[in-house]
Length: 604
Ligand SMILES: [Mn+2]
Image 1 (cartoon, protein in one colour):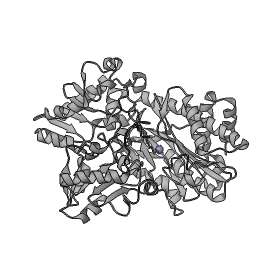
Image 2: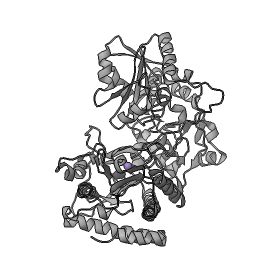
Image 3: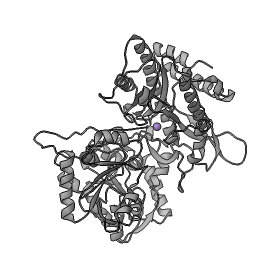
Image 4: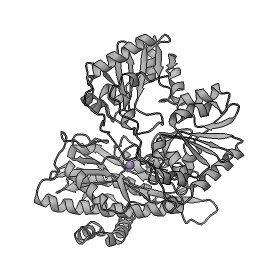
């Protein structure tokens, strides 16, 4: 899981800071000049990033809302902020209620609201910040949509930070497992087979995967904000801030890849006259499709061809993931061993844990940064699924409570994401019952075997059934894909309740999280999360069967288990897993941690 807030790095000297009310008033003046009724402010950037650079924090700038998902609509006389269930509470705390009305999307969706405005309502939007898929949905509400050449917020944002320009780092072949030349060659062959002249890539993680590069444009996600055009003949045009391309990077990219400033991208699109162009209409900005259509290019709309290739890790990436998880597990166990000792001596807060964990990860080889801001949920905070501690909310870990710790690291050889829930002092019977039900779901996924072609959506029920039987559930997905030293959330595979027509089957080498949970509001939260990789199951027969290999190496809190609720098979799985964790981590931890580890991995 991940929830990230980015600190505004704008210089404050000599700039008059406007209130949210003043910003909205200025925006309304522009709406009036443009002769439109409203403007749409999404959270994302022109690369459809989940987490955005400070220069793209337009929603935060106008509303003060820092959540990772949400959309504002500002009209001549109303300002609305639409957020999902994770963020209603946070939005209430952050926005000025005199200016913005908060609308929970579970109660009213944007489309329902648009439909109520009627066909005369004209809505302006920035066509670089929305996909075609999204705009088709809004057009179904029957309103009048107006793409703007310039984002009006940018013209009133007086202290807008610069776009990031951190240098690119090359991603070594010993971590990537396949050269970017081979990847590009495979892609060009694919374009040839589909009779496509060129392919437009707009997702930063796809571009980084294809070119074997990483960046530092956004905290926690080592991507390079850029666009790419790959031509069938092997030429590649790369659009980004050229300052990011050092001499080393230029040598790595080679002569077939030419870098251009980002502002030349439109001209390059316009030059694709009469060409057949592969573009992902689900993820590309609608502006790209409009330009291509105006250039009379023939559109081949299909999923970004890098998404699936990137999701299926090769053997080098999988081995890297295993190694990264050993180092990450060693850091996490050192944290828990330290915590036990520290709690015996005095008070420890959520921030203390966060800082200590970061310092322990920083001691590990190949560690770069965290893969998301840690969720350190003490007591009732554990029930807030996207809880992020700050000085105001910081709470100490109290006896008789649970502590939920969800965190991860970016290592050169892999990305980690792990949640463990531990008992502080003696846990109550209800806590143990809920924890054991979550564990049963976790084990059901960890031990699942399924035929080729099975989607994560079909496995989701395995994780929930022990809870469902007791009338309990959790309001988040069971699993998300994870990158290889890339985004901690990536598709296309997932394990979740929502059934969609274009679900992707689980394929060999995919990494996905296994993270069922249970949340008792106002009391405690439980989540057990490990990353797993899809591998072949050794079953005799003609059909291919798959199973999961658990990559995460960290004990599951034995003190929270009600053994009477587990089957013999479940106990065997847990004992085997703990024996493996002990054996694997022992050479990598100090004596004190080893002592703790031996106790925590004892057989049931
Ligand atoms: Mn996760």
